[in-house]
Amino acid sequence: MMYKTRPNFSDLSRSARILSALAVLACFSIATPAVAQPEVLQANLREGWKLTNGNQMAAFQLQLQDGWKTYWRAPGDNGIPPSFDWSGSRNVKSVLFHWPRPKVFSVGGMQTIGYSHELVLPVEIVPQDPTLPVELKAVVDLGVCSDICVPASFNVAAILPHTIGKDETIERALRQRPSTPKEAGVARATCEIMPNKGGMQLTAVLQMPSAGGDEVVVVETGLPGVWVSPADVERRGTELRAVVDMVGPAGAAIALQRGAVRITVLGKHRAVDVLGCASP
Image (cartoon, rainbow, N blue to C red):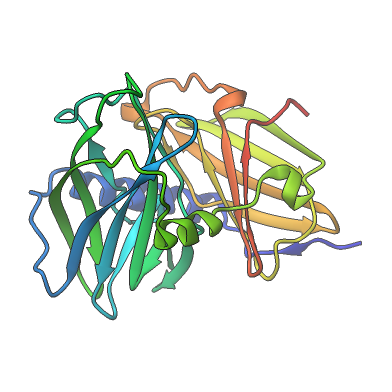
């Protein structure tokens, strides 16, 4: 049986993609943050509720003007990844994001991943002491794009309630999360890791039913500063294969841990989130 294949790129075009993407990232890294105008982006914090395990559920809510989008944690070819500074918070031990399923945008041959119109991003706060109030303060930096891209920065703050009553808007966003491997029928996930010129190449193979349509695969390393190329994807029956290149910061060696590799499959019918991959 023949593979159904997305267009592959030659070594020359792959190198050009890498250099182009790194140049774009360099430009974004030196850009001066600016606050988006209110007509482009409006942001607020939904205070949520206290969970039965003592954690607090809250959410960032972003309203975007028509024609504008913001980005997922792995933004694609030339997006601006969001960042969150919690240093002003009190009684916060850790924060867990529950990202809803993003959309894939293709413009001018470039692929980005994110959200249009609205993003409700649930955040689960683990307090240092569950018996004390959680004072949440965050500085959020992200990008919003239409024909142009604008870095945006805003502050949110709240003392989170100790009530158990739930917020339907946040619950709806939680239901939009990607499927787990068990829910999606993933039988096996393996990764072959090989050195290549300038970095590493990772080939991920997932044994799983189709997520629908032309599947997009995103590979995250769990390491700061590592650039990962868009995946070249092939499917044959229940086997999905994705190949990515990786480049360390300033060409440094990459200490990749298989258990930290995160593979997300974005399809027409569902998204699937797989954490960790075994050796072939």
